[in-house]
Length: 507
Image 1 (cartoon, one colour):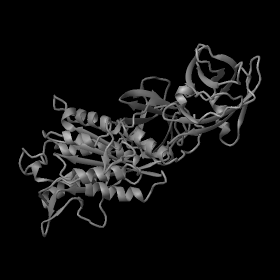
Image 2 (tube, helix red, strand yellow):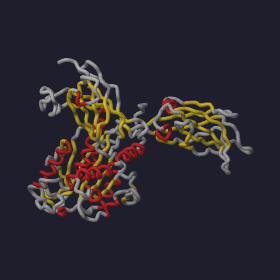
Image 3 (cartoon, rainbow, N blue to C red):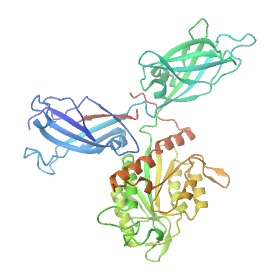
Image 4 (cartoon, rainbow, N blue to C red):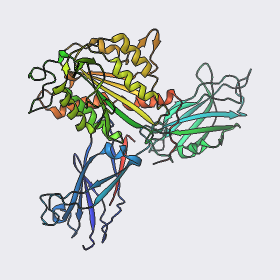
C-alpha cells in the first residue's frame, strides 16, 4: 500500500490533543508529548485515533481514519519500562470499505509514559561545613542552614531549615529528606539558594554567608561531595552529599482478593442476599472487587490474581475453610484478570455452602507468607478483603496485621451491607496504631471503608465504584514508600525530567 501522512488524535475524557503530522511513512515516530495529571487511585481512560492526513483541513472528519485503541493511563505506566503496545482496530463507521472491516488489524501503536519528577521524587541530603566564620563573642558559632526555592518572578521562598549545631565552626548536620517539588518545583535547573546563619537566642540570627546551586548539581553528589564556597564577608565552605530518590518503576504490585462466604450474607438465590446474582446489575461484592481490581491490575505485570473465599463449607465433606481458592484449584489459586476472579467468585457461590464464622487471620497470614519471601522492595502485596460483618477472630487478626506491618504488604477491607462496622476501625490505624500482645504495628497498612458511604443515590454503579476505588487506593503509594524507608531500601537513582505523566507515541 502507498505510504501516507499520519497523525494521532488523543482523547482523555474529551478530545485532548493531536500529534504532529509525519509525511510519507507507515512507521511514524511522533515527537509531541502530552502531559496529564496522574492519579493512582483513579481509572483514567484514554483513546487514541490514527488518521491519514490528506489535506490541510483542521476538521478531523475530512481525513482517512486508520484505526483506534483504548487503554488506561495506569496501564501504560504499569507496563514494563512504561512501554505498552496496543493493536489498532478499525472503526466500524469508517467510510472506506477496506479499513472499515470489523476485526481487521490496522497495525500497532506503541505508547510510552514517564512520571515527571515533581510528584513523588524526594531528595535526601547530608551537609557539613568547614571553617565557618566565628560570630559568638564568648564562643564559636551555632550554625544552621536555610534553603530557598526560586520563584518565576525572581523572588525566593523558604522551603527547609536544618537543625542548629551548637558551638562549632565545622558543623555536620543530620540527613534530611525533602520533596523535589518543594525544593525546585520539579525544575532541576532552577536556582536553589542556601543561607548560612549563626543562631541567636533572641532570634536576631547572624548572617554568615550564602551559596547557590541547583537540584541537578546537587544530584551529582551521589558519587562525590559537592563543595560550595560560602560567599559574604566571611569564609568557609559547605559540603553536600545528595541522594536522589524515586520509587517509580521499582515495585511490582501483587493483588490478592478474599471474599466473605459466611451465612450472614443471606441465601445467594434470594434478592435480599448480598451475594445475589442479578441478571441486571452487579451485587456489592462484585462492584467492590471490580472497582478496586480494575485499577490495581494495571500495576500487576502478569495479571494473575490469587482469589480466596472464607467462612464456607466446601464439598464434598462440608469442611469449613477460611482460605479456599475460588477457582477450586488448591495448587494454583490464580485467576486470569479481574474478569477471571469474578467468574470464579460466581462459580463458588454455586458450589459452596455459606456458613461461618468470619475469620480474617488465615487469609491475611497466607498473603503475609508470600510477602515474607520477597522483602527486597521489588514486589509489594495488596490484599483486598470484602466482608459483611464483624470479625470473629479479632485477637488473631490483630496479631496477623501487626506481623504483616513489617512486610511489603497492605490490606484493604471493604464492608458491604447494613451492619455496624465499628470494630473494623480498630484495624485501620489512622489514629491509633494496631497492637497485639503489647507490640505495635510498625506501619499503618489497613484501610477500611463501608461501601454504603460511596453508593450514588441515583443508582449509578459506575460512579459508586469510582468513588470507592479513589478513596481506598489513595493510601497505597504512601504505604509502599513507608515500607521502603523502614527497610532502608534505596530507590533507583534517576534524573528523568509530577503527579504528572508524559505520554509519547510511535507506530
